[in-house]
Length: 420
Image (cartoon, rainbow, N blue to C red; front, top):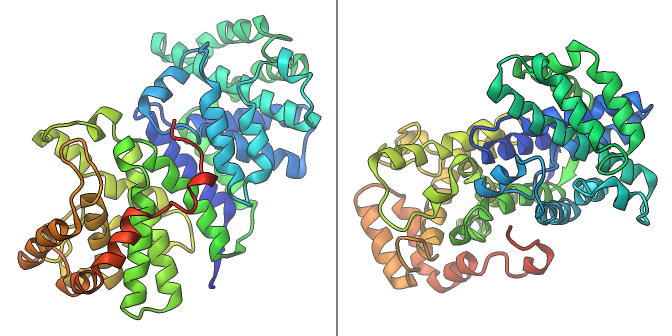
């Protein structure tokens, strides 16, 4: 197994970028919540690892949300069914050894203080979870305020009144008091603007050194990304796992080095992360896409690149993932690279993606059987769209490739949360 050198904060920041896309227009919610939670934590006297855990949990608090319809409901100040995404997010974080410690913060980040205070949990978990809940609601109120007026300072008095109304009921009194103290500063509110928020978060990014990770550790983080995107549509459940398994298997058949095969698996898991930006109804549309809808879908591979490019140490994986819709004849997207610009690994991911997608039910067609898939892919290869050499390895190992594509994730299914 290879060793990868990754900054965990960069990976978490990129995951937050991916989560931002779910809201389509509601950008940087996780980062604003993380900023406000950290400032409240400092006001409470927290420091060190406890403060860092709070920031990590806050920036990922909505990792259990994949669907835009669920995200829109969370923008309501009061919603009765918010606990579902809390459990999904907690299970996801618990599945990764590097984030399992913050899982309880996410699990209880919508639990009211009058209930939470009597639970058999460490006090720091209760306070951190409730802090995230409080500033999450502050951000929802802030966004509503900006609809009516462009200056957030004009709405801060109303926001503080709403939070004070829930003091001791929804929110811990001491946390509310800390927030009210912070809210007196204009700088606290102005930092919520994107350009100032980026500066605040960049300091946090710089505070963590690069960490040596095993493949399994890195895969467990990447698995969080892939689950979130696959859960966006019932038609793409386990798609990323299937692409990852098949891409790795093809790499092994072709005699690539173990490190390359591992990276192919990771690229397969990450290739569709940019689809989080697409509205649910577009991915679930039963009929043919209009020209305008197709152009909108075509941006997802570039969004994949945009999300992943800031994680140093994943440069090759990012490239292979982002090029999965490029074609050998240059007719693909988003860069229109021909064979000369496409690494072999990118061509492998592209073939694995097409094979696995054809093997799944989609809203506009039923799943295809192996022979029918091969007939379609041979046409693509004959037209110069995909690498015929890669396709030959599937043809010679069709049953095994089918198993890799269709049954990907079965062994892990019991460890993964149910779809939201």
